[in-house]
Structures are given as C-alpha cells and as structure tokens.
Length: 293
Length: 266
Ligand SMILES: Nc1ncnc2c1ncn2[C@@H]1O[C@H](COP(=O)(O)OP(=O)(O)O)[C@@H](O)[C@H]1O
Ligand SMILES: [Mg+2]
Image (cartoon, rainbow over all chains, first blue to last red; front, side):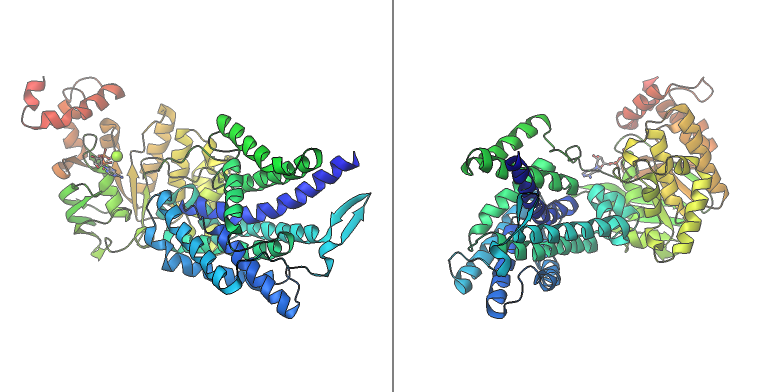
C-alpha cells in the first residue's frame, strides 16, 4: 500500500515537471501550427547555463530560473522575429525542418563550448528527502514540481485574464476570426513563441538538478514531450497537463512493479491505444480544418 | 460612401475579382447576389482587409482602406461577419463578444458600456453569456457574431450570407437585427445566396458575375427584373415564391445560362 502511494506521489511530482516542459511546446503549436522540435534543445541549453552558473557561483539552480525565464523570453522573441516568422503560413512540416536545424545548431554549440559529457547540478538538498506519513519525497522533486505548478498557474492567469492571453487564445482557436476583431497575428505569434520559450527557463533549470544531461539529451526530451502533447491533444494546455501526469505515473508505476525499462514502452502503448479511439488526442479539438472567412 | 474601384484580387491562381467597380451608398443596405463562386465573399474580404487586392482601391468617404490590414480597416469603422466560423468555439459568449471590442480594450468603461448595450439589444448574449460558443446553434451563432461586430459601433457592417443554415425564426431575428442596425445609421453591405430574402431586406441590389458587376439597381427593381427572376428567384417575378432549394439550384446553374442563352432556359 505504502509502495503504491509512494509510486503515485512520485509520479505526480515527475508529471508536474513534464507538464511544465510540455506547456510551451503545445502553446506554440496551438497558436502558430509550429512544431518546435528545438524545444528540447532549448531546455538542455538552459540546463547547461544553469549548471555552469551554479558550479561557478553556487547559486541555487532552481532559483536561477528567475533570471533564465526573461532571458529565454527574449531569445524566443528574437528567434521568432529573426527566423521562424519567415515560414509563417507554411505547413507544420516546414517548421519541423527549420526548428530541427535550430536544435542541431544548439547541440553543436554546446558540444564545442561545454563538452560532450554528462552533467548534473547537485545542490546541498540534492540527495535529501522529506518524510511524510512514511512516504519519502525527494526535495529536488518537490522543489521542481512547485516551480512547475507556479509557472503553470501564472501561464493560466495570463492566458485567461489578460488581453494578451485572450488574443493568444483567440488566434489559436480561429486565426481569421481573430484578425477580424483587430488582433494582429504577427505580434501575437511572436509573443506566444516568446512565452512558450520562456517556460524552458524554468524547465531547463529544474532539469539540470533532476536529470543528468549532455548536449544530445535533447532528442530524448523532445520525443518524450511530443509524446505527451500528442496524447493530450496538440495545442491543448489541459491535454499537456494530463498527458504529462500519465507519463509520470506510467514511469513510477512500471518502475515500482516491473522494471524502469518498460516505462517508455507502456507510455507509447497508451498513446497508441488512445489515438486509435481519439485521433485528435485526449483534449484535442476536432482535427483542425482551416477556417475561411 | 464606400467606393471600390478597379479591384483585381485572387488567391494566387488567377484573379477572382476582375476589375470590380462598385459604389455602396452610405446609410443604405446594399445586397450583392450572384452564382456560387462569383466572388461575392471575395469582395467582402477585400473590403475588410483579409485579402489585399492586387490592383485597385477601396475607399471609405475618400479615405483609402486597401492599404491597411484588418485591424486598420476595423479602426476606420468597418466590421465583417464572415460566411462561416467566425467565433472562438472554446470561449464563452461573453468572451467572444468582449473580444469584438479588442481595439477598445484600453478604455474599460467604454467596453463595459458597449457590452451592456449589445447584451440588451441581443438577448442571447445575456442569456447564454457563460456558455461556450461552440455549443450554439447556427442561428444563435449568427446573432453572437453580429453582436461581436456591434461592439465597435461600426459605420459599415459587412455580412456574408447571414441566412446560411438558419431556421425561419432565426432568419426573422437576424434580418430584424440588420434592419435595426441600419436604422441606427449603419451602412450595410450584404451578400446573399437566398436572393429573395437578401433583396427584400436591401435598398440596393448588385448582381455579381465572373468577378464583375453585371447589373446594379434599386433592390425592388432588381427583384422585378425578368432575368434576375428567371435566374435567381426560380421563375417570373409575379409567380409564387420559390422554395429555398430551387433558388440555390438556379443560382448554381447561372454561369452556364449567362452566355446569352438565358431565354432558352424557359
Ligand atoms: N481561400 C481560397 N483559396 C483559393 N481559392 C479560393 C479561396 N476562397 C475562394 N476561392 C475561389 O475564389 C472564387 C470565388 O470565391 P468566393 O468569393 O468565395 O465566391 P462566392 O462567395 O461568390 O461563392 C471561387 O472560385 C473559389 O473557389
Ligand atoms: Mg461566399
């Protein structure tokens, strides 16, 4: 019994972090139909910067996300204005090619500057745990999940309570409808891309503590994150949350009752079965048809 | 006066509008009719800024509109209800209508005032304010779409087939709403597949064929015109009303009939 609760709690903690990492990816797809394959590489980039800063200054890696978030917001904005806006209006396939190029570039830069070795930030609480009712909660997991919940909550507030958020959601739901009420799609797209990228500022910092990484780790991460948003429904934030929790639980439950090697397989089996019955994913709206005015 | 002069526009594969000249008088209800694919929706898209013309100009009271995108055109007081799917389906009715006032968002008071007025004018906005727009019926959706446009108190309202897919009761509601807006001083430019309904609402009628104006007259005169009656009203002007289905069928076959053999069509 304790074992089951332990697995469930840990699964939710892990899932929360996955949700944070997947949220930016699904937001960017929802608004612009861009499949940002570089999202994983951006996470790894942040993880490296965080790890380096921590190892030199000793500042807490998760706290560093307070700095990394605005930095990544700026980088996202620049990437969109400088690179991605050039393919606006073309197919999602085009965006995969372009962002894959960005991902490889980031990987290459990291290989040269940081070296092709596993890294991990290990602050003092790294191997400590809280004990609650006989259940052990690794401190790093708890802090990571708290940071994730905070960011997701903030994202929710921005999207639901501000005009910027309304403009972003409107554009995602009906681009020509948004144009007709005077929303300028170019500005909204840049903003959504910047916000989506800003989430990697927190996600990457948390990653640097929770998971050892090296430059090519981004392949691993992007396939996991794409799996999550396909399961949840491309473009749906609620879907990303649920998909992420399912992945987290699948991992801890299979690791507890079987072997960790099976967890990925189980997760992809879940995706396959769900897609058989709901091709649009759990929370996806009907497959997008382009809406003409 | 909304003036469209020498407009050529299309979607990359040849021009749909081929030198369109059209004057839409202020304060009137002008209705564009014509066969499927004639370019009626394209005219509205060019005016609202969704589509940039390749050549030609659109002016409202002497001010160029064709340089601006949709936001700029809206700023000049021109709002459009598109042919289909204008709303944000996962948002509430209230959010949808409020987004109609996106360009006024800095002025909270004005926004609230406009919303209250629109909700009073169009009861469904108040009644279903917390329902998702995606759950509305076709007629209710049209009402909310018009409500959304009214948030900016447009001087020109563009309506693309407002009757499309509506039941008779919604139809009466929508056409009353259009007439009320017009009585309040709004110029209306309307596209209708249901020619009888469109022309009966309108003061001016325009027949569009092959991307150009084929015929232009007072709406009543157009309805009495034997050729229009033959092609779009399913028979002679004096005859009994045609069912909606046969109207559409006649409109669909119009391009063939146009090449001079309208008379042989019986
Ligand atoms: N988005 C589009 N892309 C390409 N062609 C289009 C598009 N929209 C309309 N068309 C074409 O333009 C022509 C005129 O369309 P439209 O203005 O919608 O006609 P109407 O409203 O009179 O039925 C049609 O031949 C149609 O196929
Ligand atoms: Mg049309």
